[in-house]
Image (cartoon, rainbow, N blue to C red; front, top):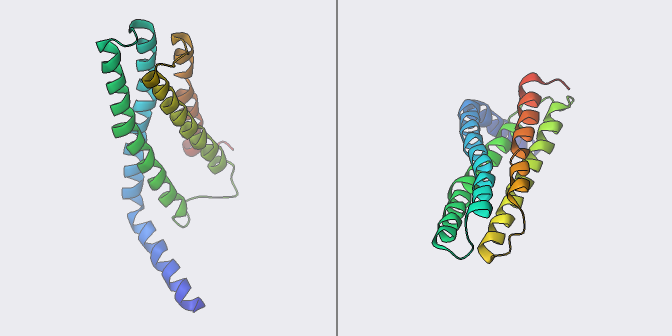
Length: 161
């Protein structure tokens, strides 16, 4: 039984190794899409809160744009980013777990996911007419994905830790 289990693990490892370049490509494309949304949605919130009257036709238009960006682009891109990332982590020999960089990247990705969820909650605030955040704060929050992206890219490419 143990020998059979080992054989399955070898097959899975071989499959992950042979598909690694494709999974990595998919991961990069999904992350680009996810990041585009993480940059754009807070910017939409800035204009929404500063230039749009609640209950107006423009308010409905902004809510539609924000919902579609989140639901059809950002959520799907986040799911694919996570799936491809987990597959890469499971690929034998890709990660040196004795290094610090996989952990700094992991923490930054979790923080990026938290930010995504925070944005989704703010979108629901606009939808319910309960947004209390000013444009200045949305502008400041718009810098969060940039800082996290720097940590992630430096962690993976430079591996200074």
